[in-house]
Length: 222
Length: 220
Image (tube, rainbow over all chains, first blue to last red; front, side, top):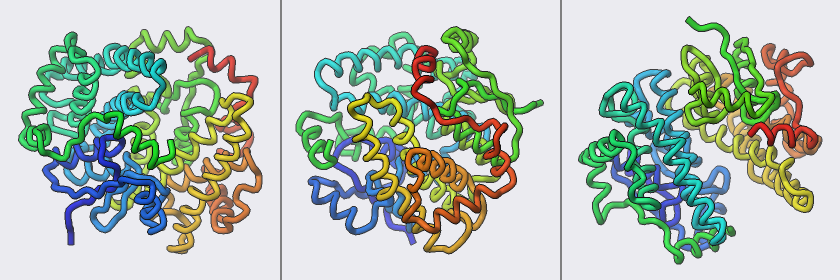
């Protein structure tokens, strides 16, 4: 018996966004229950549905899964987006951990003081340009394939696209030195399930605004 | 053709230690190349050996693997410490991510400024005894088996033991309220490969000391 996966999180990107991306790319419809107040979070905790008292939590396949990476790994494997063997998996994991580091930096940005924000934004751009994007550009250059690993769409491609778009929101011309990533971006964005997710009206969430940050601070006691 | 895995890191626990644990538990002999100076790190970076310019890096099976989780996933998968199917893997992943979170919390304690240390320590104890250890105690209670997942040793057991021992280094009676975790600790510690790793002379690293911090910070 399988209903749609149900996502429990606040109505914003945060740690849940990568999960929304992966489900959407895999063509899996999902429901969402939004945490609007501290009381909503407390209720989930008191109900005993959050293994470590934290969200994201995703109800699917009879499980109440928590921990972003656990959820993403499960989805990737279930929907054949995790390579064909242990070695391809290793490459996907390495690439994805890199983009996670980069996207985590962006996610934390709104929570800093104005001065730290500016510093960290500069760091994000520097890291994207000098540490992360060159790796993916080189991977595409070296094998000449359309996808990062195993000549087939995988979690790595979806995650890198998500990261590219997030960094472009910080700096629109971030890909200027990366022609292959530009083509990659165009290509992966055009995959029907992903194209749909990128259109208005999808479950993709917008970048956080001041109002959302204030709400999140309240709910999670930050 | 692969020789022994070769670990590139500083001579300390840090982010490499869970990898040492897992290799040891799997009975895999490994070599280590220690970064002693900033130049050692620079050399690896300019060699092109570090995908994201960072360590840990593990040379294994023709790859130069980076990113702690990627390495752990690969080693666990290769040595059958990752469950038998997707669902067991999901459980293992959930448990392991919780353990990693607690681990990071404990690790970060020594880097706290003097005036924040006591408060941070209290947080570590609170989270360990109220958020994390109760979960694993309950898992063991609910199924009554020797191992966390699938009635078989997995990385979850190895990583939990590592973290229990680290927590006890902070506070020796950390497991006072967790009888099943106490017997779990003894049981997993007695597995021959792990028992060997816990003995003096193994490649297990000692806890980081305050005096080591300046030297390590200098490298990074």
